[in-house]
Length: 137
Image (cartoon, rainbow, N blue to C red):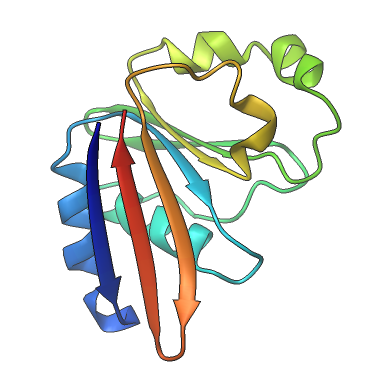
């Protein structure tokens, strides 16, 4: 396992996104309180990949699909999910093993399904700055 701590302010988010994408993992789990910057960082990751899609948090749909030159990006928001079984019914494994990027907000309900080859990103606010603790599994 590899750990990385990144402190940044919003104007530096492009650098942070590039560092995370440089870790070469397609499944990323985003932890953090409401307003910690999960969706903002995911939007930047998508833009760094070259996606021109309209970005929004998929709170009500559970998953949004974005297109980029290298394939698809699946953006999950599991905040409203009640049980892991809902993910199974959604075909979550198919998304995970598709070879496409999977960015997962509020991943607590998916932890038993995501067991290897992923990045865990814990975001916290520190005044004007944000702290991203990145663990590569």
